[in-house]
Image (cartoon, rainbow, N blue to C red):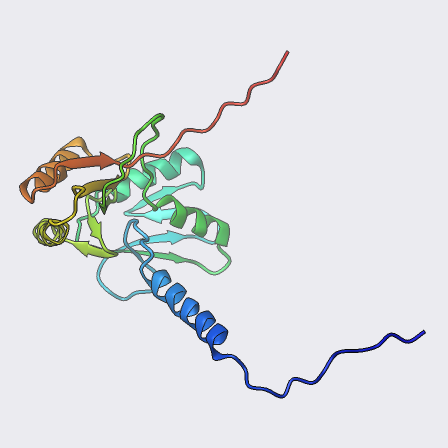
Length: 215
């Protein structure tokens, strides 16, 4: 049994509108991807600049500032605290000896990311926000840039002026590591007040849900 076919070879012109729409979306994704904010502790890999070294040995031990750490939770937390003592302008180089475990190296890299404190039931805001990240070394990051206090103040002042005509007030959101001192938080809140920002929110992360079993 043969069925009639209605398929015909398309010989007309392609509609450029869908193609242009897809290309436009790709351009937007590329631009937004370049603006993704990745705060953390500055670590340079394979750099010859002056700084301090974090080395993973072939026996998977971690050496830093004359000390040796094991890839265990207690030692890694101590390493994280010791890294906080590095001067603000001095980078740290992360390297590994031949045969060292890439898992340990990645573990150190992940450990250096900013870890906000845990809190439950914290409220957010519907206002426009300016996000400032603070790592354990008291370095300030805004708009994907490492800034001094004076530079940060100037940037926030410009943002505050840009939002002056908005019906909602600008809110400063602090993405601060749990190891950042209260003094640093107070200084940033005071800086926000000086540039006219009325609301400051300390970013937190939710705690893990406890597992409950029915009996």
